[in-house]
Image (cartoon, rainbow, N blue to C red; front, side, top):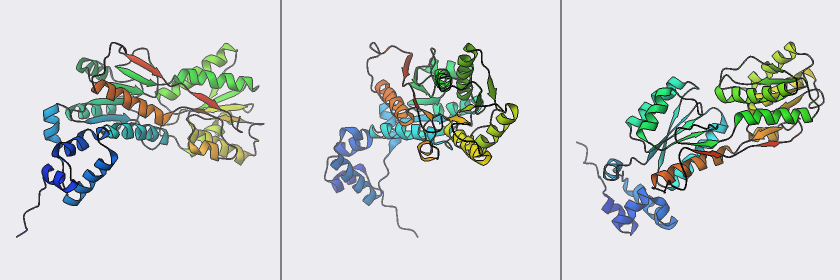
Length: 337
């Protein structure tokens, strides 16, 4: 017969850590209000005793689950992972846990995840992008749950949006390439809304100059380096006079650079290449990739800060909702363009 389990209580943890019971409770629910040394002592006591906090009891008392749900298209691409890292770290410091879901770039899958998160009584939601099923928008607005949309901008957010204008990014890249003297410009992008907006901005700016865009077949996301190489080959078959290409992410940009090398094309003399997101590989590859820098991790941190302000009952009179927070972007000039 197995011996009975030794189930520790919060009082046991307090005694082991040499602190009051209320301090243990505070260290678990509001770690930012406890000194690092006290948090470490409580954590060590919990590990020694094998104590499992009763989070359900706390959430029933406060009517808070202390869980935030976040939905991203994929975690295969590091720009989304960086944003989630910033989100998780900022929430964790305030005693909240992050629950992640992947939509696979499909609004119906996102809708199912929203239902699942709401069923688990999350305290807030972070959604990637500003395009959602109408039923999702209506339901979240009706519930008045704190919601932050990220990675794009809109004048009509569900609640708050933290991001940058993908259309303006496309226009800025077009202007940059025109300034460099290029007139035959192509686009490589994924089959998803934010990539489409970058293409839209690129096309708008070039059309204003009486120019067109040679576009590769949209790639089913998540995109790969091989996709970038294959798409540049497609563009050159469509337009042998091509001088420059804007890739909707750095992964595709690196693939385009590899294809230039394979074909013996000099970069940027024969082909200029611009990426998006400023991954570490953009600066490390040869030649270094000119790209558009967006603050992926900062985006996640800001989204968390907005949620925490809402959840902590910050006055909304000074910050009217819906709120639009534009983090902007920057073209980082390197060797490829």
